[in-house]
Length: 590
Image 1 (cartoon, rainbow, N blue to C red):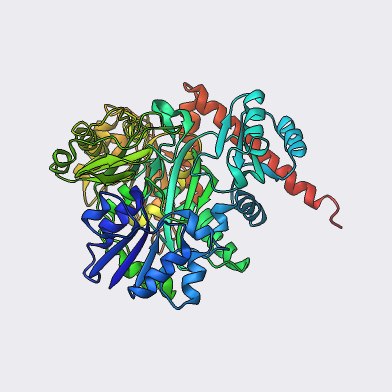
Image 2: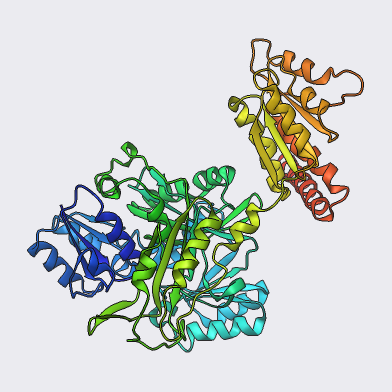
């Protein structure tokens, strides 16, 4: 196959690097490419926005597959153009790409199909936008409607900042036509995550989770950029949250786009805000993120060319992704002055030394050749990306490689991946133990409640009968590891809760599970009938019991944790409000 990749940044270098590994691919072209890409592909001097020039080249060179990197050509309809000419191209159609190119469209879609997002509205009138902004209050987020290279989203802590942002977008027109409309939203709290998936308009095949770092300075300070680094996986997206994202965001969005007559094919990127067990969509992108593509493509072991072909042909349900278990971190090196004005043409040294570090790839974003040297040619210059057995290992390798590279004014953030390390270092307050992994669907209900209250937990399998030493060791070491409570769930006549209680001074909550012909009565009796001196707080059978176990654990922790106590008060108030809502619906029933 002959493959054409459109674009010339770090994302496109990563795509070329991955595509060139495919045994199906004979030759890779990249338009326009950059200095790093030229080591792997033939760079063609055609701008990514020159749709006719790209079409003519693809026809002339008989390109078998075109892969679109940046959002610009997608929003201008390059996929529609190529498909009309009978050429195979991977990416979203113009109407589907509006999910990124028009924040107003995305906002309306989310609201119409009840996909969780921030409260907000779109405006064409400055006066109406100003009035709504003052009504909504601060903090607030002001967004240019159209494409703005990742810089059209302004988070405002004060009303003065919000008014200034509104004027920048709608009056001064700093973002050009992207500011024809503006979206004003409440400012959400939590931790951001990026969730990308392949989709053929029906099937959604998720990639690993990742997290971007938008702000220019450490600790997320300063103006937004296109992205100063990323890592994968993102611990904030655990197994429970992954399932929630798929069921509440990704699948409903693909179905919504199909219902709107805009079937979505390509890569769908959801930018999310996650707060405990809640998630909201911040934005959608209609392609691979940059710099998320770099760590993601380092972790994807599968050949992505057949996957892209399956997306085009509508048979993605036949595909699977093989993922490297290791973590990956990308640190972006930028020019002095970015995201404002910056110099170009500065010689870059140390690239060969960085390349020698095992499991490190230096992806070029803004570089070119000049007089036999590689020089800077953009704001974001390099994406130094590393694999490691842990996030900490990957961070260390990436920054080791960064230390080998230099040019005048080179800059990078020094805290890429620190949120992951902080989250991974949290000691679990609750241990959840189950007798078999078949009990997981039940015990996840306990985990979900702990997540709602922001309580860190650990989950494992240990059988009172098949692995008694493991169960006893877990119980004996739980207190030393910082745990305060153990929740134990088991089916049949298992004695897991009792065994754990016998080997710890921590309170143990038992969850009997219905997994036998006795409909759980055996499990219930073996959990509740503890001998004197070995107490177990026994919950109801099954999922409702597991939920109550999570709540009960939270209530015990709330005695010494005001934050958990406040969360429980909100939870109970929410339950009462829901009862009132249901009662209101029935008040006129006759």
